[in-house]
Structures are given as C-alpha cells and as structure tokens.
Image (cartoon, rainbow, N blue to C red; front, side, top):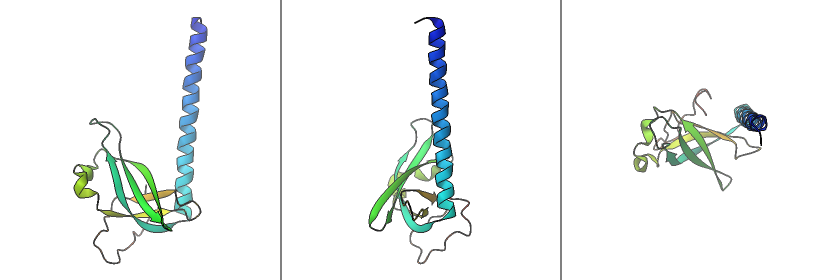
Length: 132
C-alpha cells in the first residue's frame, strides 16, 4: 500500500467516524425532544456511578426506573463538579424525577438537581430545564 492509499484510508476512517458521531448526536437530540414533547413521570434511582478513572475523564451515572413493572436504565454524563457520588454507597438510595416517553419508555431524562426521597407527595419541577 503506497502513501496515497494510506492517506485515503485514514481520511476515510476519519470521515466515517465523524458521520457516526454526528448521527449519534442527532439521534440523542431527537430522543430528548421526543421525551420533552410527550412524557409521563416516574421516580428513579441511581444504579451506578463511573468517575472515568481520571480527573478530567467523562463521568457518568446509570439510573434506573420502573414503568408498568419493567425496569429500564439509561446512562447520562454528569459534570466534573458532580461531587454527589464520591461516596456512592450513601448516594445510591436517593430518588429523582424521571420523565419518559409513553410510546418508548426506554427513552427518558432525569433531573439530578432535585432529590425527592423521604418527601411525601414531592412537587414536580416547574420546568423541564434540568432534565438531561
């Protein structure tokens, strides 16, 4: 394989990666709009926390929720400042508002700004701005 063919192959891989990344990004936006436009609410809990292994790595939480007797889970990235999970054992019993698509309950968003465990009849947030 000559240098020109190697360059074409590298460029092809880069273009394919960019196309896949953009497709994934567009799909995430589409799913978020679907959930925000038409949704039902439930309460969810954090299932797992991944600190990324390094100070500047992406951190994420996996949350779970129940709809009609079935458990669903979703992973969402959290900011570096999300210190709530430093001791996950204490944190895993906390509860949060979840909105999900009634047509596709596996599509959901979580509000990590408001903890609702231990509150009788917790008030749903006034806006959907903090759901991600």
